[in-house]
Structure formats: C-alpha cells, structure tokens
Length: 106
Image (cartoon, rainbow, N blue to C red; front, side, top):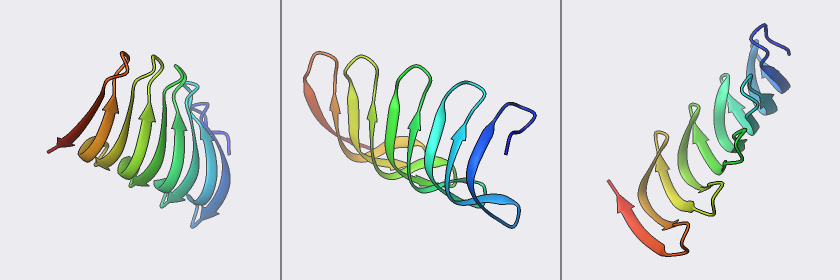
C-alpha cells in the first residue's frame, strides 16, 4: 500500500488495517519491520531511523514497551526495560566512552 503521504506498507492486513507481519517505510526514510496489531507496531519489531539509530525489541500500541535495545550512531546503547516509549525499569546504558552504567529509571 502506497499512501499519498509517501508512506509505504507491505504486509498482512485484517479489517482494512495493518495487522500481522509487515514492513513500513516512512516519508522520513526511517522504517519498521515486525509485528502490527490494529494498525500499529505491537509485538516484536525493529525500527531503523534514517540517521542510523536502531531499536530492536518489544512494542505495544506503537510505542517501545517491554524488553529492547537501542543503539545510537556514536557507539552508545541502552538495553533493558521500556515503558510507553521511554527507557524505564532495569537496563544497562553504555556511553560513547565505553563506560557501562546500570540504571533503574522510574
């Protein structure tokens, strides 16, 4: 499906919404591949921003939610818990200088 906004989706549908496995390219050049539920990323998936950042992990209602890892473009990363799109809970943040930091974000 090619939308007028230049968004492209290829994958499963149910009741005229993205539902199941799919791949979506956004007008920004970023893209998502994984599970969809009721038109939004939900389940397991990988989002790659145009600038090279990547999030791989669990999604709920279009937001990062559950276990996942984010990798930045300058060597930094966060692996751990996510809630409603934000790092929250237990995780390990690795900074550009290589220092690991265990954090519990609440």
